[in-house]
Structure formats: C-alpha cells, structure tokens
View 1 (tube, protein in one colour):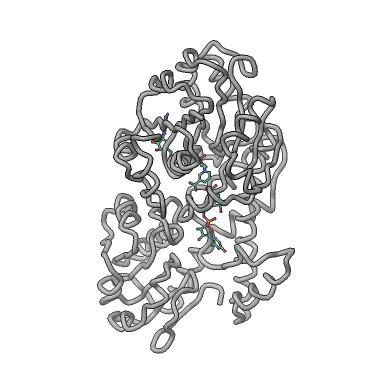
View 2: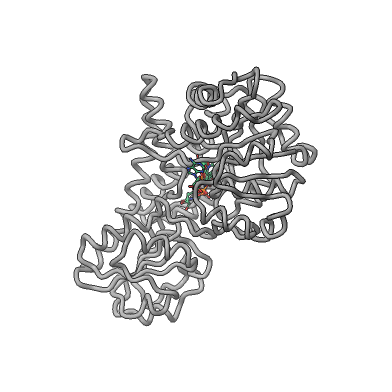
Length: 433
Ligand SMILES: NC(=O)C1=CN([C@@H]2O[C@H](COP(=O)(O)OP(=O)(O)OC[C@H]3O[C@@H](n4cnc5c(N)ncnc54)[C@H](O)[C@@H]3O)[C@@H](O)[C@H]2O)C=CC1
Ligand SMILES: O=C(O)[C@H]1O[C@H](OP(=O)(O)OP(=O)(O)OC[C@H]2O[C@@H](n3ccc(=O)[nH]c3=O)[C@H](O)[C@@H]2O)[C@H](O)[C@@H](O)[C@@H]1O
C-alpha cells in the first residue's frame, strides 16, 4: 500500500520504518528540514534501538521524506497517518492546534489526491477531536466530504520510547476507531502482518478509540503513582517498598509491571496525557479526583528526593552530581524528565550542579535547558569532588558504580531509581526503600 505519514518524530519515524518493513511504500512529511534530510539519508532523527538499521535499509527504496505536502499528490496514498505533537496548554488542556494545522495542510492537497484515501489520527487526542476538529479541517481545505470522498479513522499508538520498534512490531492490541467499513478494511490491510500473527484487533468508533489511549496511559501512570504512595508509606515505616511490590505483583490482578516506585514518571506523554484527560473531563463537568491525585503524587516525588538530601547535607556552595537526565533508560528524550525539577531544586539551594547521562543526546537536550550546568561524558569526573549525588534515571551502568563514589568529597547518595548497589562508606538514601 501507499502510506503517508505527517509528523516524523518518535512515532512517525518508527511507524514509517516498520510499515516499510511490512512491505508498504511510505512517504513522511515533516516541516523540519533536518529531519527530512536525516530520513532520506537513512538516519534516525531520534535515538531508538533498531531504527537506524530499518531506515538505512528502506530509505530511497520504499521510504521517502519531504517537507512539501504537495509531494503526497503524486505519491497517491491509500492511507495518511497524522503523528503530530499534541502538547499541553498552560491550563493542562490539550493543544490541538498543531494537529489542526497539519490536517488543514493535508486538506489542501487532499483535493488533488485520487481515490478514497483514509486519514488516520495516530496522535493522542481527547475524545471528539477527530470528529470535531480533524474532519472539519480536512473538509474545509479540500472541499471534499468525510465518508464520501475520503475516510477518517483513529489508530492510537502504544509504543514506549527506548523500545519503539520492538513495541510497534509486537503490540498487545491494535485499536481501530472507524465509522465506515472502507476505513476499517484499509487499517486491516496496513497491519495485515500483525493481524495474521494473531494480534487482537479492537474494532470500535472514533471517540472510544481516542479514549482507550488516554485510559491506557492514565491507568499506567496511576499505577505508578499508587506504588509511589505506598512506597512513601513504606519509607516512613523503614520498610523496603520493592519487597512489598514484588509480593503484591504476584497477584495476577495487580501484575508485576509498573510497580517500580521512585522518582516518578516523566516523558512526553504520561504528564501531558493525564493533564489533558483531567482537563477534558472537567470541561465535560466531571472532576476526576483519583487521576488528579496521581498527578499530585508524581509531582511530589522529586521534592521528596531533595528533602532526603537536605536531611543529610546543606548543599549551598557545594558541587552536587546528578546521574541520569533522560526520562527513562534507553532514550535521549528528556521531556518532563524528573532530572529537571531536581536540577532546579539544587540550583535554588545554591549548589553547583554537574550532570551525566550515558546518552549524549540526553546530555545535549538537557544542556539547552540548563546552559549553566556542566554536563560531563562519564560518571567519574561528575562524582569527583561532589558533596552529594542524586541518581534520577535507572541506567543499568549505574548499578556497577562502586569505587567511583570514593572520588566524592562527601558521601551522601540519594537514589531515586533503586539502581545503586554500593552501600558501604556511603550515607545512602533510597526514595522508597
Ligand atoms: N513519543 C511516544 O512515545 C509516543 C507518542 N504518542 C503521541 O504521538 C504524537 C506524536 O508524538 P511524538 O512522535 O513523540 O512527537 P515528536 O515531537 O517526537 O514529533 C513530532 C514531529 O512532527 C513534526 N511537525 C510538527 N508540526 C508539523 C506540521 N505542521 N506538519 C508536519 N510535521 C510537523 C515535528 O517537526 C516533529 O518531527 C503525540 O500525540 C504523542 O502523544 C503516542 C504514543 C507514543
Ligand atoms: O503515549 C506514550 O507516549 C507512551 O507512554 C508510555 O511510554 P513511555 O512514556 O515512552 O515510557 P514508560 O516505559 O511507560 O515510562 C514512563 C515513565 O514512567 C516511569 N516508570 C515506569 C514504570 C515504573 O514501574 N515506574 C516508573 O517510574 C519511567 O521512569 C518513565 O519516566 C506508555 O508506556 C506507552 O504505552 C505509551 O504509548
């Protein structure tokens, strides 16, 4: 099939590479020329295991990128995915302006695209957005009609950063929100290899498909906040929350995943999606107290790390090492990383912050936000001369740190991710253990 993808970030690039690998012809449209160049050179614009290899294999053969929506006309797509950002407004509500702008730009060329193309919203949008924002924008600019001249569908994405390619190729479900059979059949054809392997398909309508995505993220985020709430109680009682989590995880109604208490959730989605669905619910007249509490518990975890630090050392005028900048291991993404409030809190205390992350992209991304922080390329020089160290990302290499802690001028280590093994000679504080 001929597949267009508008927006080529973590999702758009992963989807393009994997659909090319399924045998489809793919064209990515992105307004960022550097991303377009990277894709056409077979290089991934984001750091994801396995992505470079796929792009190298298909770029120029069955995968093309452009910054010009007009190129879609000759490409004649059967399906066009929208994988555009849906950031957060100041009041926490979803900002659909980029998705609307992308839909309008697509609408202008849709007028000249032959056949009955299906426009599929893959971006995470609150219920009603596809029907009330995307559809009208496409109709307005193309002069065509939804359901008559082109189709409309919702196909949320569930990949996790750091395992995007693996997750896309082995999803636990495919969610197809459609309101006509042609759109459903098109999505079934796009994902035929996965469906043939037995991946369950959830065939539903547009709004339910939009809601399933938020419910999925909100449930996972709330599960982590609940184990953090329980973990904070354990800390007060001197109990190891991980021992408790391991035990309750044996109850298959709870499950062992997403029970790692600590610094909490960051990333580009849990923070924005929980706020967006809370705001959308309030807009509808319902106040989701439990989801709001999950957000509040999460926001407090970095502060609890800083409180633990304060209970042992006054860091004013001292060097303090921050280990881990990416919001989770395996990625260069620092969006909403827990390291951000940690660095801000240390600077408020008058500390001199030095930081390290194994992923150079994460270091570079964070350096843009904190120009007066020193970002070093390994743990030893970061720890050298530091009065204290805070561990914020559970990179596996941090588990092996041992003698490096002897380079510190002090010995306070606050571990936000239960990754540091060394204890002797340290004043070691685990956030919930
Ligand atoms: N990052 C993730 O792990 C996941 C993200 N999602 C959702 O997918 C959507 C996209 O997320 P990401 O890929 O992380 O975003 P991203 O920020 O990594 O990439 C978005 C891309 O869209 C491009 N873009 C912006 N405006 C454009 C326009 N008008 N026309 C064409 N391209 C434009 C940007 O240049 C950028 O390359 C969001 O709604 C997000 O919530 C869903 C599942 C996983
Ligand atoms: O919509 C999205 O963008 C994606 O958001 C999450 O994926 P992601 O944010 O990439 O990464 P996760 O592995 O879910 O971790 C999210 C955050 O939770 C934290 N976390 C996770 C698990 C846990 O047990 N404890 C915990 O603190 C991680 O450190 C990280 O900061 C969801 O897991 C994906 O299914 C979804 O597609």
